[in-house]
Image (cartoon, rainbow, N blue to C red; front, side):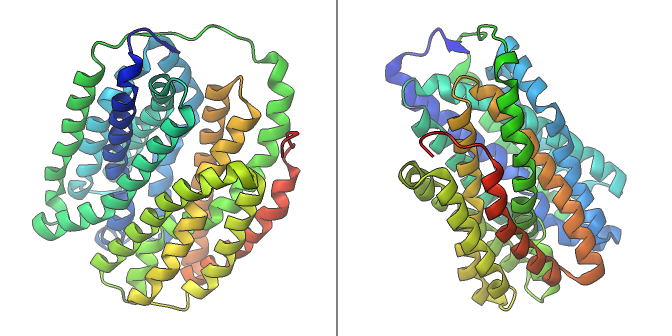
Amino acid sequence: MTTTKIPVSSTSRQVYTIASGHLFHDLYTSFLAPLLPQIIETFSLSLTSAGLLTTLSRIPSILNPFVGYIADKAGAKYFVIITPAITATLMSLLGIAPNPYVLGIIIFFSGMSSTIFHASSPGLIADASIKKTGHGMSLFMAGGGIGRTLGPLLVVWGIAQFGIGGIYRLAFLGWATSIILFFQFRNIDLKPRQNYSLKAVLPHFKRFFIPLVLVLILRNALTASLYTYLPIYLVQSGTPLWLAGVSLSALELSGVIGALIIGPLSDRLGRRKSINISMLVSAVIVPVFVQTSGWYAIPFLVILGFFSLSTSTLFLALVQDHFQDHRATGNSLYLLISLLTNALMLIIIGNIGDYAGLRFAYYLSSIAALLSIPALRLLPRLEQQ
């Protein structure tokens, strides 16, 4: 995708606008985890069922490569403009769902909206960044991380103010975001990318992405248990819901900071070494975290967020290193694999939590994180690595 009407002098404004759109979009996608304890209580759900609900939001990611292709052909800006409003509306309706089936339908379509946004927006960032794509992508990812940090705080505040049935009032921020994006991009024309063949690089895609599936399964065993099941684990351990929301936000905020620090450092240390260090530290801290409670757990969550959640940036950079001539395709395949393996681990971790307790599931996720280190050696290396 090439830009026809974005002047160089306005690129910073465009990048910050898209990054802000990412912030407010992901603000709403983070509503589900802090709502799960009340949803479980209201509908008498098991942990496996709760994990399945979250998995429903990941299923549309199967269409990620197709959405990316359509966005390139039809114009990514339209998808980026409308999806914050759609996601905000759907996620703000979770509190009035009459039964688990309607809840699942809402979550599925919010996942579809989220898939469309995340498949379409990186192309706009690359176009608006001109020759500073790395800088633009770091701001974009930081925006999403900040949104996921503030989201749990916003929805917990909304429950305190309006009750869980009144959080639909929070949707206005998503609509305001879409309106701002519309006025920002209404006069920007985008041309479709030139056609190219992937046949020559298909063997490299197979060599890279097949072992990456194993690596991400092991890595996502840790991140799935840390993020989605954290509020449930903390509430079951006697932590108030508001403090569980604060803990989740602390985890996310430290992940944003970690991405902004570890990401640039990986340019010098190397992607693999940075990933290995991050997973090793995370694996060591998890068993310590489960021995704490209340406010004492937050410092360990900060460390876990800093190292474990920042690995998303490192894996994305690793993909970009390997597929510099096919960035969009590599990015879409990585997102697809990452989301599907995360969905798989949500169900597995939830099932383990039902039968053996979430504490035991956290211990297993620590072991999985350790195993991801030797598994990373299965990926092909570039000369500079």
